[in-house]
Length: 339
Image 1 (cartoon, helix red, strand yellow):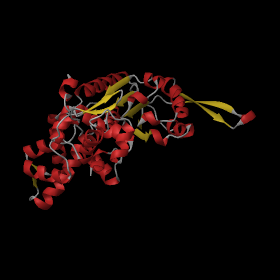
Image 2 (spheres, rainbow, N blue to C red):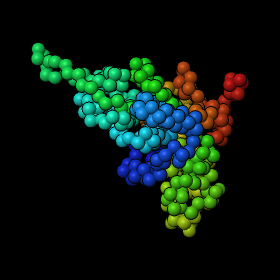
Image 3 (cartoon, one colour):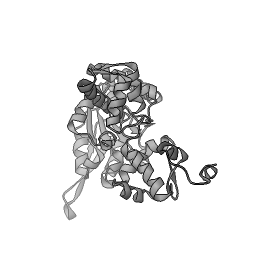
Image 4 (cartoon, rainbow, N blue to C red):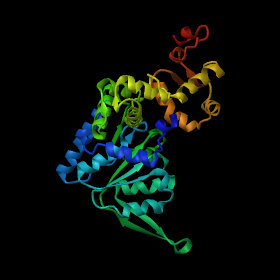
């Protein structure tokens, strides 16, 4: 079950579910107050001048609203949003086709922009700065370059790993914003809004329970709400209370800290098999049967945020809080070593 709520890859039902709950205006977007304020100001200024919005980079862990924010920007500017993703743009011709079909002021949204091929990325430089693109026709001695003028457009890039973006690419974004994990209070507001849209009968304490276990992520909160709604419909008279939410989430092995089975397996592996660490990421991944990239991007950020895991130059290390959470005794001198 952990992959269902942690993975970035959503099946068709997940996508449709998200779209019904996705806010379409800044005023409906919960959380990320500073980012929202900066973007609202930029939109107001661009519209006041009658210009297109400057290029925007949205960074942060999956599920925090980067895609939603891109569509809100489109709605606020009154333009269409054409979406794609970095891995899909395998060759320059793919990008050229998208750029040449853009209308003036439109937004091109590229998700996971750090995964664009280097050859494709270089085509973006002139497109972002000068709004032109050079296309090479034919090959060999007959090859020639044709320069195409592009309408002034806005590129909105989203990335879960901003450190993998090249410096030339990053410097071409006029607005760089990082989305952070949500507080329990903000997630409570997300759950209550989603419950109202879905027509779910939910008590305040039920929404608080779901919010507390959602790992600071609205996408996970909405997915958990969907599961608890199904549980309440079948076993609890169609009403979500704290007790109902607790029983429903216990079936998913999601504890009161928002940790699932894989989280605990990672911590237990580091502690029981490798003496609490340090141990390399690849070794942990093999031990728990998961890809290193998934551990690094999906599970580790929340474990580190909760103070349960530490990254060191030598590898991953379990903290004292991890021992306490699992009910295990730390090795002698462990607390002194932390001090």
